[in-house]
Amino acid sequence: MTDAQPNGKSSIRFWQRGGDYDRNLHSTKEIWEKISYVHNNPVKRGLCRRADEWKWSSAADYSGSGKGLIELNLEQLPRYMF
Image (cartoon, rainbow, N blue to C red; front, side):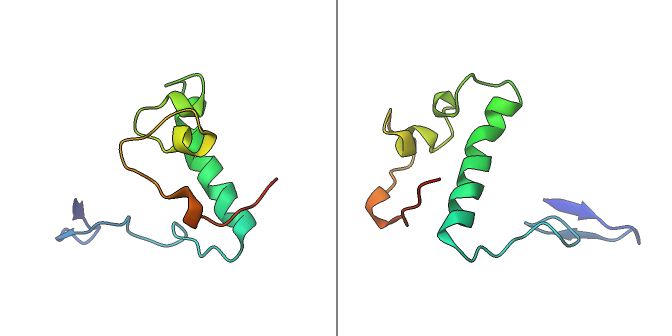
């Protein structure tokens, strides 16, 4: 997490330097779009055939086909149907 800055100095940072990486989500639809996007990243990269096959994803929890590494309380999530 050491970031070599253009001026030659180094700093420790958690987030990427610069803007346009974070997003405020203002609706249930936006939240579910981002969850779907994250779940489908391993599929797009060819790391698995289906999102719920990816070991480190919560996609199996959301689909009801399995249980991920971190327990999710799906009852507390906002509901939205595409």
